[in-house]
Length: 85
Image 1 (tube, one colour):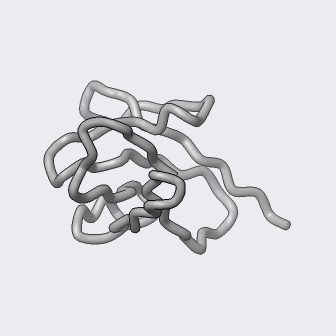
Image 2 (cartoon, one colour):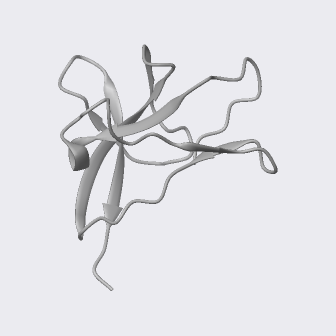
């Protein structure tokens, strides 16, 4: 889930090593009731690196997570750990 009040992006994608950093995948849908961009992903257990891509040009980390890693380009990326059920 990604939230930005102002200015409102036209497009948000969740891009990471789970989709090989493919910027054409991971398009998020906007929920006007909650003012949030959302996506559901089916991921296997493991640790994933990701960032949000705003309007196809601005990369940002998820400020709602507590773990970050190296994005390989001198910056940081968000980390998501999926555990086995």
